[in-house]
Image (cartoon, rainbow, N blue to C red):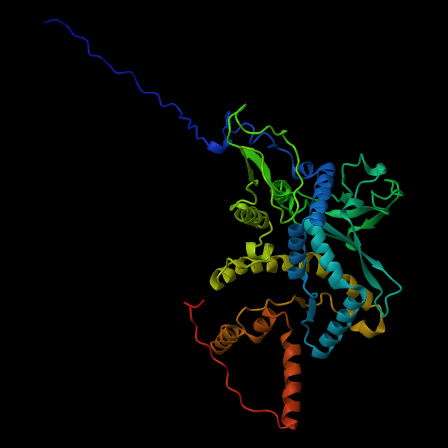
Length: 466
């Protein structure tokens, strides 16, 4: 019996398996090479360098100054965000003290033109990317509080020569050890002024400077214009409009043309090419043999002209969270339901912007106003408060159907799903002030015998009609 050998299988060795997951957007191909050519790995501050922001500011300002759509969009944002101005409501236990402080702050705000300055800051935030204001004294302001809000353009906030090599100074902002702004360097004259030099500046503490901008990346210390993504689109819209107008004008400039169906060197009479013939009104004439009279057919504006402008304007407005009907100030293509739906997103964006303004701008202004006010005997009680409880009210938004909104409001109050404070806040009003005023009116109406029982108006919903 022959011996035989058994085959033994080699032991399996487990090796780590590496998975190569791929993202299409991370691949560089011949097709997308030029599309992503400008992508970089710069930091937030390096990407928004001084030269880059200067170019963006100049182009944004030019577009807003010369483009009607851009100007209207920026004005709409400022008007809807600030409105007629924010109103302060103090929330201490002393109602008389609350009304006294609220009245004094409102009077001071009117004297310094706070609402107009806030609208200017909101416009600067869109076109310049950031808004600066200095809290300073102004002896010309009547009243015990001499505080003033002095607006500063973003171009004036830059690093002076003596701080160019300071690693803690970043384009006009000196940072502390924790990365917080400690001081601001502000030129006394605008760089576009002939008197401006980088050595003529003021160093102001951060507690006296308001810097309002939207940080889109962590570690970002300066803002870029909010309409930056829309700047190329604004330019395209303007160029397309001018091109269409130019084509239409060229076609209209030719009153008539002479043409012939005869072949070259045919039987038609000899006519000089490109010759010009002046025609009089209501004149009958005879054409040369073989020639016909015609006009250039106007091909512009094409039927897609209005649709193109609508689409590009809709894309422009998207980066600013505006619906098309607000950006174009035209709701002809909307029905009632779609108009309200678009407005909901827009008004939510406005509320976020107002909350940011209250936190960054208004609270710092109020803190400076309280510091000035408590130095006078009239508001000495403010010294006992470490923090004044308060909130801000802005203008409410008007409903397109007041009757239906009133019914909805009554239903919410009756079902205890809302409060008078919340309902008045929707209209930008202080519920305590409104109730006191209403009590006065009812008291006077009772004295005059004018108070009668009224029944609320009810309106049935008609979804089909909407």
